[in-house]
Length: 521
Image (cartoon, rainbow, N blue to C red; front, side):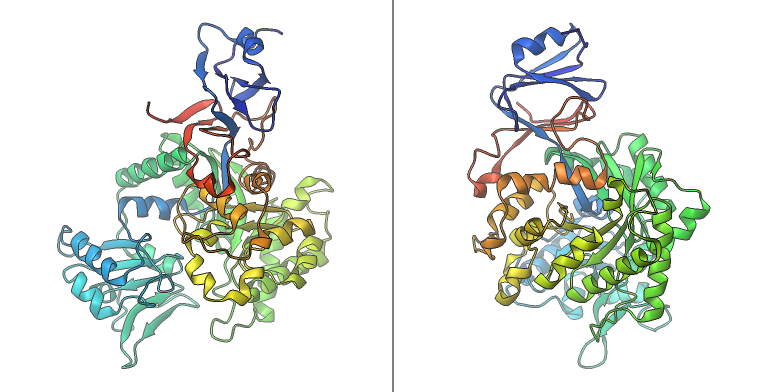
């Protein structure tokens, strides 16, 4: 074997799916060879870094196909209440946190969900005023689709007088007396653009912190699925990557309303440091929230027009769909585009054709939708971690459980499936989501329709091989010539009990042959 001058050799371990190998050699950011340590030692030089795995397992790095990086980075720098189920405890934590903030400065917190609290409700405006009396407050809902504001926040945003022009589909809810309750829905981007932003230095520091958290979780690549992303966010991500604040491979969606801006800028599917992985369609402005009906015909036609233009740019179209009505809307738009342009005329009759459409979340999929999903070639980007972290909410509606993240049905029907954590909606580690996909158990140990469970190998593929096929981010499998995006785990995930998957420890994370995380010894 010729000397390849490997830069890194991982030896004396387990190579996932390769019982004939115990070592991996890496050169120029790619897997140069897999084999036995005695053989691969011949590929080293004095400059090669040698890592004795001592029985640990090398696996493909985890690819998170759907998260919200900037929101998660912000959460990591502020008050995170997502682990709390007591509203009273949340208010106490808010009070303590806000007591250290300068008067008048915005207090930002995250993680309340009325469906998860033992009180069965969210905070009232009066409760928030008592907890945070000196500062405007924004407490973001766990789902990222709503926020609670205290009175100072309401006044600062001009909501008290009704002078503020709200975006389409937004609602500022009122109490029984007709007063603003503090809960606002469908205006998250509007709020984010009106609340003072942090400095670029602070933003860079937050990005470094969250990127490090991703690295500790074994994540080597991600797609930011923010529907509000546009050219500004593209430049921001590229800048953060350029200075090394983000160490993972970066993918980003742009919001459908930014598509024309992207076209004018001559945007390609792969810009410097950032890969464009889709155009995001959010249903809030087009699905009648009160009636639950799908989009009216003029809006459906607008979406079809946008989706067709995105396809001609080579950009997949990603549709947010947590309800059946939203799934119906998404499929109607996809079928409308395909009826106009045909199934293979946009990108040619190649594998890229299956990457054109994505259904994000697809939380509820009745059996009668499986055939339509398969026929239109849409990928489902599921969030099995929701089963573990939000099981309390789902268990309250047992009749829906067979259709809730129905991974077994999707895989058996031949529908292509990958997954994401949706961080910060659920925590960062993909292993928790992989465990949930294989066990269908929530944080309390309750079963949530186990007949929809996947094998451990299938569950792993949602964040490795299948995720790589969807995102085109490289990595995803252990083979010569593939990108050296790897994770080293303390045990073989195929050998442990499924319920113990989330307890596996990440010892090392490697992106393009570069070690971006190493467990302290």
